[in-house]
Image 1 (cartoon, rainbow, N blue to C red):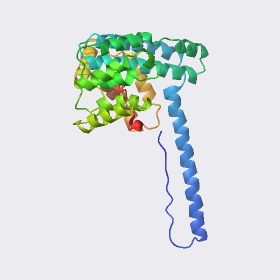
Image 2: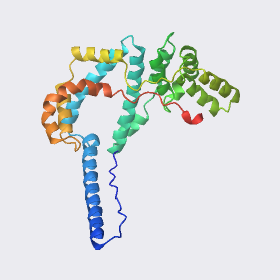
Image 3: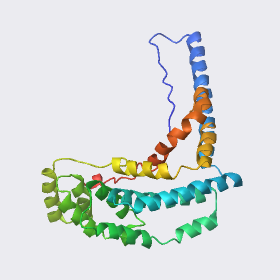
Image 4: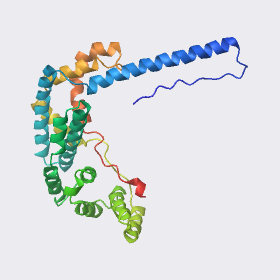
Length: 281
């Protein structure tokens, strides 16, 4: 959330009546601008999180069906990072659905989502962990999912951590999760061993987006399965309502949005990487 800061530069001369009037005017301007910013923020939040019309919900189902096919395509590929990222996005999607349901006071939907079992996600996650070879990038995303509170009871965490330490030996990130587990158990011997391993690591690597190969897979899917036009139209409609988009840019949205949509799809996988428990260190 952006914060608008309007610093007041105080002069070194004694305040005169004129200076006081200027200060009062500056304070009024600051208040007016803050109110304007807050109004825009409310409008923007309504665009993003507001209740959709029935017609809009119907049109959005086309994108949901398209996204499901994309998930199936990625899971059917031979890219373990794409598998892990798809699973992470599915879990994140449930969190978003819960948030939206609570936001709009849909208690029935909240109850259904709260009763949903995460066992199927755990089963798929453990299948990925059981693979003989796992890529460095996939390890990071699997860690992210495995240590999510609602998934942890279903995940073979010890197997995952041991495998990563064996296969990703030069990466500092391979040891931070195990160190957090050892610290929680107050296992000083393991903590010391892990610190020694960290000291000999060669780099600290964690993916912040998707890999080039996963990006190419998404491009391939889009080439054979175009993004629904209704999804592009909905994006244009929403962007035209946002305060941060200039009038000149809003005029160009019809031309620019179709080319932007693949990037929008890929951005949906951002910030799903692991954030290790650095506090334990």
